[in-house]
Image (tube, rainbow, N blue to C red; front, side):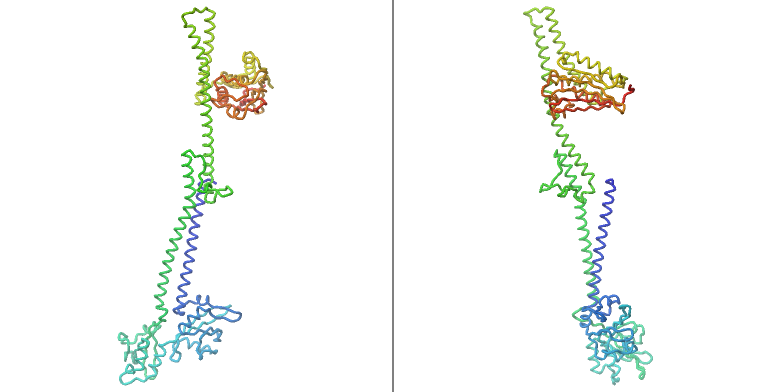
Length: 575
């Protein structure tokens, strides 16, 4: 998977994870809010609960059914009572039930008790719940001061000055902060107490809609008695609606705080999850820019993005390709730095050797020129020719040295022109070998030529192809002792190419020499070697082989000789 796709998957997964956590927090907060509101409602007034709330607080034990302690405390705090009845009126459970309601009663009586009545001084709320496949009726009753006051008013005969002249009625209504109004048969107001703003004509909507207004129509006197009792919750509980509103407001503030905390935690987590790998990469790049080619570590000396086992941490895994690239870049830069130091060291050694190589012929040229310029002595023609020959040889050596320098830099900058043409490889290599055998510098070496094919033609630049073979063969002769056997061989390959190998049984090379054999400015590290030369021969040979789209390699072990193989691609014809 590409880095782009990994980042998309990572960010989408993190986004949905954050949304899921946020929804979970919201759900938990709403559940807590609902539970607190329900508990407050239970503590203030059971009659405001829903059927579901009542069902959730019923407990079962075998065949028995009841309510939990939370409901019981609320019933007791309101001086109420509670019963659970079967659908036919049989009592299943009772709690603080008045004596007159302890036994089973006819269903009709229960229905009548559920409605306001002068003989039933209780306010009743009931719920029909499902229990084990059967319907149960939960009755909840609280004292109804309005019913008691209404009964007191109805059973008291109207005095001369009206009911409000009766001290017991005034006292009773004042204690409950209640009021009454009496209307005649036509619905006109006859008398009122504690409610001067009462309607002058009987208002049915007002009476029927208000749960805290009770009425009674007397068939004999044809009077309608209306009594109003304001809600009076337990002072210890305070106002129920106000309390619930406070709880909702407090819960909403908590919910907002939870959301802010979630966002803050998510931001910190996201910064650590996403920002830490990016910051580590920036630090790493800064380290590389300063020349410190190592992955940054923390204060404890451990790598930030890896575990103890060396694996990338999960938060770093999505950037694995980038970290691998940085690691590869770090390794490459470290190797290049080491290589650069080696090259600089080799360059200094080469310049030192080159200075010596130039100084030697220049000294000879300067010496012979001084002799020729000496006036006290007249030189003969034979002596002058000898001096001239020496000066020419030294000048030719210097010219070759300069030419090698020019060639190596042309190869380095790919500025060398190649003119390829068909060349008979076997015959060309044979002639180069013969020329080297006849060279005085190779007089003490045994040179042989071997081939597995009679003719082999390919397209090469004849001049540079010859230079390749001369450099390799000259290097084998120059850096091996006398009586070393050097074998030049040609072998065809099945893919149409061919291999030229120059192998000797000399002292071989150490690892350092072998690794730097084809480097510019490097002189060989054989046990016995001729330190003359420019140190560019094998580097030039390699560059020329690469220019011909070939390959070159060296095999050598210290004390077991050396073999240099040159592989060229397929030739034009092979017999």
